[in-house]
Image (cartoon, rainbow, N blue to C red; front, side, top):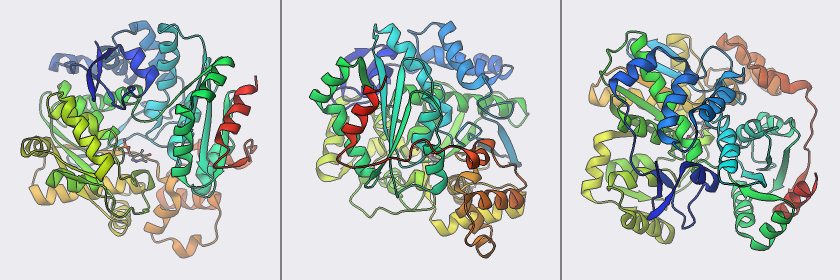
Length: 500
Ligand SMILES: *Cc1c(COP(=O)(O)O)cnc(C)c1O
């Protein structure tokens, strides 16, 4: 199978090259030329298999230049080696009749990004070998919290790679900072920057395009790469858990093989829900994809009106991983909906860059609303949803998942559609303990507590065990206490690379 760019369909590369490059040179995103098919017989077969084997089956349809043996190694390393707690990395929990929660936070960093970032490093090192690259890949990451830690855990001690992460020193939660500065591994480096996330992001982008610096890195035997969510290698592992969730619905007798389900996803950069769209196009029976946003509801407006307009206020919310105004992966959906028309995509993306707004045709808007329904939920209702879900079901959800549960309820109320559903849960409630405890009415009780006090308190309120990876942070050595100025990123990277 060949991959083409959403902005240049003449460009054709194999999956290993697409994963190595991340982004196409003209700024487009790589997509498979055609979407492979899963038959009901395939799904029937998968129902009896483990998560790892389901993953191999789906991955081999997309990554056709990898040997099945290689993909099995990748999947076993990622999902089979005790990195995820519990029996399956993506268990489906039944909340009430016809409503299921897909828990994607059982990995080492307690957020769903582990599902892709645990396997991406293995795809990447194999891609380097396949493309004849003998250099060390240096992964540069700017993070506002979750991605940095998940990438560090994914790449730590992976042969042939090094990783360096920059975070805004005053812009992440205490627990997120602790997670990063105590990171283990011989090939890792973490640095705070004096500045905000945008400063970190633009600093990293500057290094990618700095020719002089890149020549210098080459002399040290290094090439730069990114673990950003626009990399195809991060998207394809996400398709797997939708296929797997459908199999689990069938296995538990909630639907008959072939019956449709609905899927609701808390959305930021549009990667997670796009993976659900690909699963549907492959043949997983899906009636509606429900796109849930927080107060940054640019996607809700777009899906309802066909106008994507980023000229609006940015809101800082209690579901920070969804605080985003440019959802990069939407480009892949648009490309598919307009029949792989790169000209159209180029025009929209140019308008977005120059004017901050683009509008799709009525035809595209109709296609959008046929597959997608969209809604949003502000912080007040997010907290109310956490409280009510806990009261009604004794089940505690994080702030991002709560946005999805609330929007799913809006969907059901508005449409009356009771099709059995999967609601995607993207983070452990322990990761956003302060907001969750506040939603549960524990503000007075927790005033002045440090993060470890909050973890204990949430454990009592929820009846859940504190994830080891968060509880164990307490005694850990702080390895990376350094902070650099936002103008010193390159210096920090050079020093790190220079170290053998
Ligand atoms: C990244 C993230 C999201 C958003 O996912 P996208 O693929 O960017 O839409 C939602 N919830 C959590 C907890 C996340 O870390």
